[in-house]
Image 1 (cartoon, rainbow, N blue to C red):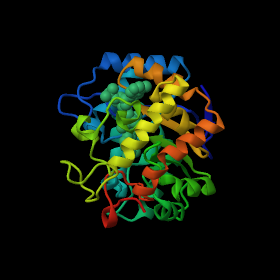
Image 2: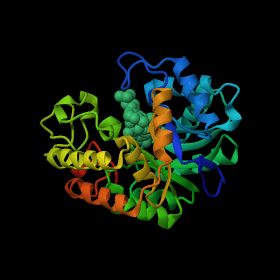
Image 3: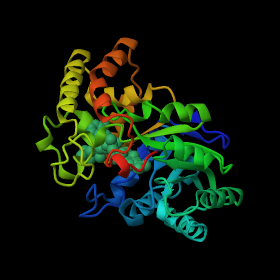
Length: 334
Ligand SMILES: NC(=O)c1ccc[n+]([C@@H]2O[C@H](COP(=O)([O-])OP(=O)(O)OC[C@H]3O[C@@H](n4cnc5c(N)ncnc54)[C@H](OP(=O)(O)O)[C@@H]3O)[C@@H](O)[C@H]2O)c1
């Protein structure tokens, strides 16, 4: 598995990362129940294949994702790169320190490899938060500072504090290309790596649903879907026609190439300049194997161009707002 290097820490991170949001899940959680045995098998198999990046957050299943990942990594910690995230409402310095300690405890480790701010900070001074993160790095509690869902202005604000920001974690896929307008070029300009989340649009890019009504409620709250659908909070008309036209076009291409849609979606995102790692949510060992196969495919320039063309109308309709769920003055990404 190809590895890419973060600077200045020198951390080497695999091109395919493991999304651990479902870990520790119970009935009623976003991804439902996920038992520890399955998580341990996924983690062991990932490491055996050279996949070293494991992505979690204090907010996933109220800390149970971190706990389950910690248990699954018992005896294997040295081979892994753990990325976890602090919620922005916990970034007041004293609170941030407490939350870092709590994540360390839940993960059963004495250092977090990549510690990210999950969403842009709105309630506290940005300089204090990044100053504290820099102190935590100096003290050896964390190895690298990261951000997530930060747009160009927010990145500039964070960089102006002097903190060494190594990675920005962002939503990116064939159906969500907003970061191409400004954020991806800004990350490249600043030498900040990009960790991609939701590369499969939570299953939409596996071709398993033919129309919006078939999609589970929690997975059709993004700006692709009309605001008349329950659970959405963006107030926009959505891009349902463009999305399903693009999916039909991709399905025809998939038939021609004889390759599963998920493979194509993962290979496309991995091929985009500036992408450091692609984090696929993984609930089973079988999905891990499929994602591993997908990321390893190399697409011809013609296929890449065809995929760009097929998804361009969705990109244009949804525009440069990288917030998948909120829009206008409520967009959290600037
Ligand atoms: N920073 C942030 O704000 C943020 C936001 C969202 C996610 N994330 C991170 O990014 C990770 C990935 O995002 P995500 O899990 O939301 O979305 P995703 O990776 O696009 O989709 C994951 C889902 O797709 C299906 N799947 C996975 N591999 C597959 C394969 N090879 N073939 C067919 N279906 C497959 C599974 O759905 P089924 O279980 O239904 O089979 C899986 O749960 C998360 O685990 C989390 O670590 C970060």
